[in-house]
Amino acid sequence: MPVPKPTLLIACGALAREILQVIQENDWTGLELECLPADLHNKPKLIPERVRAKIHTAKATGKYGQILVIYGDCGTGGMLDAVLEEEQVERIPGAHCYEFFATPQLFEDLVERELGSFYLTDYLVRFFDRLVIQGLGIDRHPELKDLYFANYKRMVYLAQTDDEALEAMAEQAAGKLGLEYVYQKTGFGGLSSFINREPQRDQPWLH
Image (cartoon, rainbow, N blue to C red; front, side, top):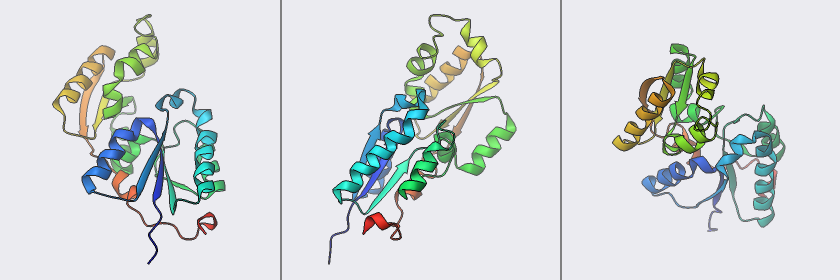
């Protein structure tokens, strides 16, 4: 009986910790993870072709039975989906990681409750100062806070894990921006079911 080929997961670097945790908790095998730098979110137009390059490299090896992409649209304006359609590779459903962690229905409910919400995940809580305060230049120009966040009313922490330290950091982050703090435990949302899927045998490049 032939040994099944592994599945390659191509993911945003901001999701690496969570993906590895899901794999470890479920004791799954036959999965390999390759990540693109998380800071590509600052240049979303680069994401589609960087993902395509990873896909081409993987296909050329003939090593994998399936390739899955764990990215939202992430500001690519549909360009990532166009690339994945051409390459016949699927990605996790959702416009962004907030949606697939929360699941579409819960995220829609959160948006309906307050459109002016700024969302954090575990990753964004850990690196809030670097990515938001320093990344947006608020540490150097405090007046930018009101410019960037004038239309926001609350900060919603979508928590993947039960971590009191992270929750405290998230609440502090809300205070730094002068926003109402909301905690919402999501766990890993749709991540587990997407990773643990059967290979799509109708993809010609698999044969």
